[in-house]
Image 1 (cartoon, helix red, strand yellow):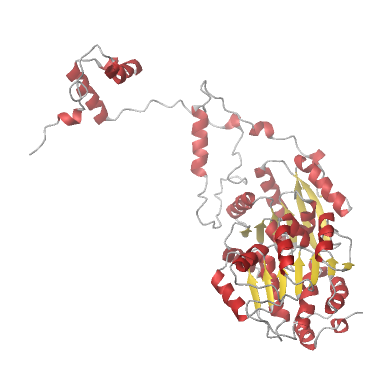
Image 2 (tube, rainbow, N blue to C red):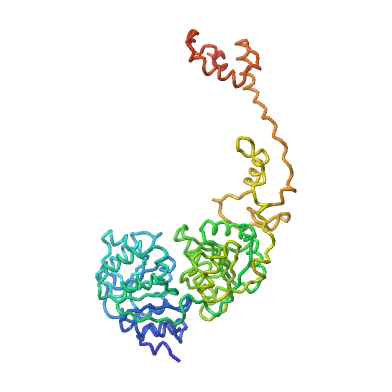
Length: 516
């Protein structure tokens, strides 16, 4: 059996690996590390959770033991698609580089430029960055790339999805042609294969498993659901409760950031221990949320695909896909958050009738049919769409009826403040199990609203109008739309003398005697 000592790593690196508790390398590590130590270009493809990060961190630490970085000129560059992945790679260098005195600089958004510039001024042996922030420093003249010896592009297919390819092409032109380049990803679509021909020179292709395959340790199930959001939330809550003690912690993936926020509030409202993570959050809040989930302070983490790639949280027991991912490759990355490092895990995907084409694409990609948890969509109860259709009539002008306005107003009054801090709430005993956006009862059972009565006129307005009528000698009933139009337009007629001052329209409050 191959051990880390057989791969050619330096004694300092081997001591750090042993201190971390690892003795046997994973297949991708065993195949990639020797080629990386020989300074060959490497194209590595392996399932998520197989240790790709250590496949480039460990040989880089060995190669960097000779030499020293100069100000603004990093020796190595690692590009990551998200801030979380970049921060995670930095943690790997801190863990495995404990016996080295290397300067590591992290350039990501959401953090002060000044602190990052100070690290670059001291000289960075390792520069870990997202492409956008790194180019910002370069354009400000705070970074020189002519000294880069090793370039690592992690999650290469994600770079393509996020539109980073033009930035990567620009960066590769700024780096010496003689560099060593390492590509790592769990999937390798044809577009990325073509790009590797531009960036890599005679690369060693290492494919320890078929691209886009899922780990055998993950139990995958499909769960039928109605297409309404409140129906899906109810199905998800039932799944979480059914797993009971088997669910240690779980990541729940949504396709949109808006859905992440809504689902998070719904789970908290129903007394679940949940947190949220998406790209619009402040960087400190994102890192704090991830830290809380890793440390077991949170049981459920509702997230967008920002948490689907490369995040190493080894003991995630469950993954729930609240939405079927639009891109089939994302399914592989999402469920790869569980069943890592040989552990077992479960992945449930909520499927509606409109998700059929996305599900077919996923099953075609992974080469297997996914089993249904409790019957497929054909066993789903008839759609409740008729109950959800607009049920209130509209008046002749197209506006909503009084009943519709009243019911919508009552719903708004019960909706929680979106900006208020989302704290766990305990439902009253009389509340149903549905959350805030679910219909409370069928329309036929809703109480009928009485026709709103005309609003009584305020006493002081009535007194002023009466005073004006008495002064002008006009009865009150003359007031109406036609009279108002007459008053508005009398100045446009030329057959009457022009009024002095206000004419007959002196406001009543101006007739009050002044107190001297």
